[in-house]
Length: 591
Image 1: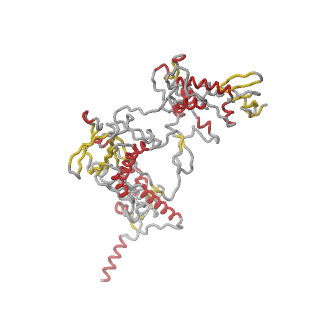
Image 2: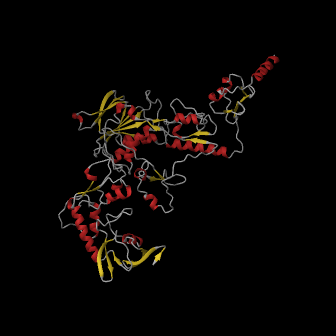
Image 3: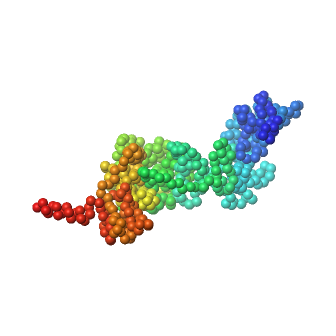
């Protein structure tokens, strides 16, 4: 039977009839019927060749019976397949016994062997980790297209290695080989090229295709151009093959889309202070000196250590020092308080005492636990046995050989409560970095005609009465772009800004300033000085009429253009010279 030019065959699998395109692998047809066939080397997107032999099934056609591998045996008309009869189980049992001899310490092989009653092997144990399935090589060549792996040797000496045994820059670090390795013999581990090299942050996407945030609207995945294998080698496109709506287009180019809006909420956030600027703390020079953001990754259950607190060498630290106010409350860097450091430092101390037996030392200038429940949490940390030391840390140095048993680093500080200089040996140091304005703050400020406070954050209209508005109507700020704040304060300010926007949307009319500036076209010389001094970009030059014009909706009546105009064409409405002189004359006439 043929359908759309494809030959359709009928066969039975464990007594169940199924129709399929001729040549379809048996393992796929069995999965369609809900029949599980064990395998160690099958992957949908590479050419199968039954290397592990675990997927062996029995094919029966008339009086002919033989064992075939389900992953690469094509479906034929009139055949009957048995996936779990006595002959198949005996065959798999022998194969698993040989695999167990080769890799006796691999959990996946141990568990699979136990399912078939194999607890021990009769063959000599080799204690290897690779079963020689070649799946890593095939996925690197056929899917990734990097050709960074190959075979070397023959027979029992055959093993996976780089081509010709020479390490070259073919590997792109995609991790596909580690993902498909059935025994997890291939692992991806960080390479520390230099002592003190900061840990790479993987707080964002861990795959090339991801949804930006769980609250994204619309909730559509995106492709990270820098992480996608296709944009590195020109191959792969696995996502395109499995996407049923055919919604993926790798040829799509980035576009700049412009929208006409009436109001804007600026929420550009903050940048973390670069601890390298304070070299006395050893960040980037000494191993196991981490920033607060890097520690969040370590504490994360899906992080590189699975949530365990470990040093670079894999050992558990004996003592950990947490240094507050790194870059904040410092005249050399940021004079302001970052507000969040004290509380997340206390949170770190709580997590460390909960997950390890390490001693924790906190070094603070002033403890600012100002929020609801914060003081109680501070008291709880004290009850947990955390060592709280009041004093600014002078430096973090490598410990001498005589103190290596106590800690690999020394934190030198002044304890102001006991009025003594102290040296605390630790294995790990956590730096509580200051919150800094974003690198593009000045560019955003100019673009939206906003002002900045002395600390570099955006300046609000009024710190108490109007903390979300700016000097430009229709432009609001929320979150840490206005100043350091924690999550509850950020949420509250964002809600207030959104409410202000909605209030303006529901208004039929918008009130503008009663006192604005204007320009007399007859007197304007077209010098355009007023355009440069206007802080609200309310003035534009009319090329056809050869004079400047003021937009009343944008003008705030500050008078900068009036003071700068050399020809006297700019004036402030209700405050012209003739009006002021008339007021003076009126006052004098009354007397």
